[in-house]
Image (cartoon, rainbow, N blue to C red; front, side, top):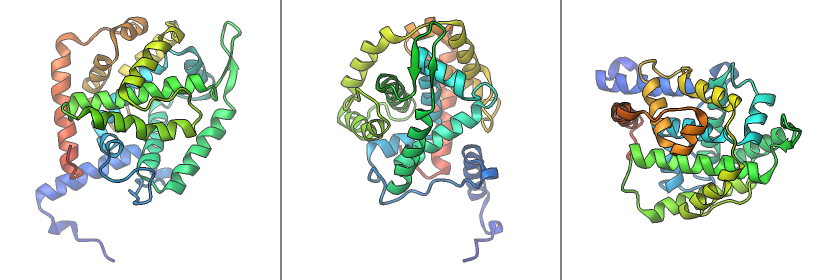
Length: 287
């Protein structure tokens, strides 16, 4: 079937289509033949459920993703794995794009594709092992390390959604989000895995003793906050980063050598919320 002639669309439709195209280009490596993940009726999760609503919002997911990465770099095992087995410093955009695609496939894709994506990640994790500078062994298959990665992602994705999109989301729906996301975490080998927000917060507090501050963690944090992500408008990037820093707990900012945005928090929230609303309009999404 032939595509509609773009000249038949008005300026509003043209603007909407251009926005959608630019976002899809930022999150899909077209050089490798990647295309947007088509939503499936045979996905792990049904349409219009909490996890599909939260993970659909591009801007809040970017903010929550950066916040989660900042927290993950405080775990010495997670940090070492990134430094030893990835080119994160040189290709932060590629790392973020691969993570975003994994989230998309496991949230919206056909369950067979989700199974395959999880199997690929597990195979990669099986090869990520080594020793910390103090001689302590680490492995990307360690259930507790995977639990920290999962809990930080789940808490930050949801918190960014609550702050920037839907602050009145019912607690029952928030708990359902954790129950749904737990399915993916368990398939990746994480343990413990929360099934409610309260459980996630309790695990987060309990694992705080595993965290360490250090020069390398601060260097990576600086990269996350200050390096422009390819595909993100240069004028907007600082506001997204500021929103992410504002999202993490005060103790984490102190450990990473980051300052709370202060007065910048208000414009960051306004810009982030406005950008999110614009993209929801472009994708015809409802919060």
